[in-house]
Image (cartoon, rainbow, N blue to C red; front, side, top):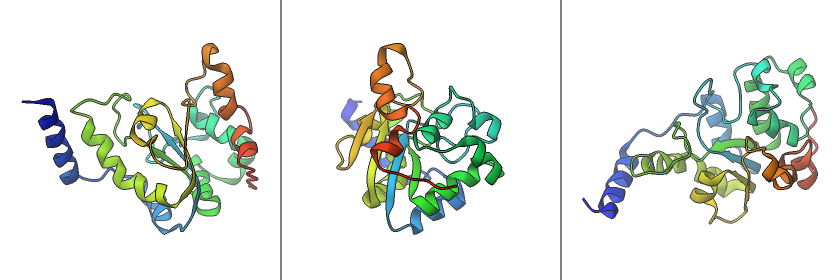
Length: 196
């Protein structure tokens, strides 16, 4: 079978497949909220311990791990993690608060773990994610696309900025990584003042 035929077949299947599920309360906020200030788009669900909100961990101990993308995005937004932990019982509550009060939301290029790879098999996964992402992007003032899969899927859209994934902290990328993911970097760039 020709590659184009396979891709079309997978795209047609994607349209009939179930839409990926976000946390129900989070999904309601995304639908209800008129304006989104910032959408940060990751790659896919983390293979272990994923919650149904991208970058959100199940416990504060996991969320506060300094080498994790979940910690990094919050730190770049200027979130004081200890204060957040004092105010919110779980990281989920903080993420709901950020979406509801500030229009800061977190999405993924895929809502199934695909390891960031785009193949004929995973094409449908990326296409189904558009059902969630495109309506949010239409309302978003700023969109940060983190990592190559997010760049590939949405880099052609307006209001997007392609950045390294927060987990890509390596010596070779230090300056590029720090531009967006150092402490308070996004807060400074977008003049955000998040009050917890």
